[in-house]
Length: 87
Image (tube, rainbow, N blue to C red; front, top):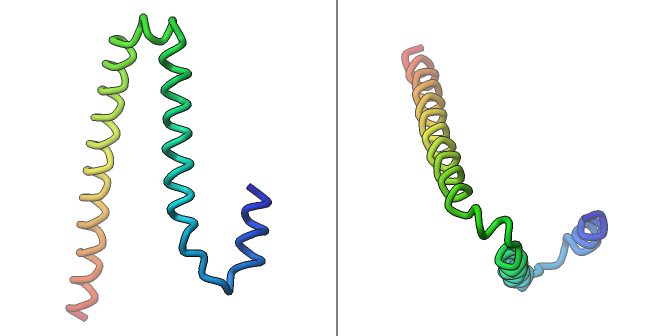
């Protein structure tokens, strides 16, 4: 990570347009390798239905929490903007 920071700092004046494609490719490779590791792990594969249900519950909770939090933040920001407009 530090070498990436150094690389970015040294080349901050240059446009490195190809880096997003490299990042995307590396993410796909990492996900593929993770899939191979999960698929070869018998303990994970035998408990996949339980893990899947837990992951679904966590995902739904995280999404609902994010939506509620964003809604509350939106109301708070708009309330402040309306108060500024009145003054």
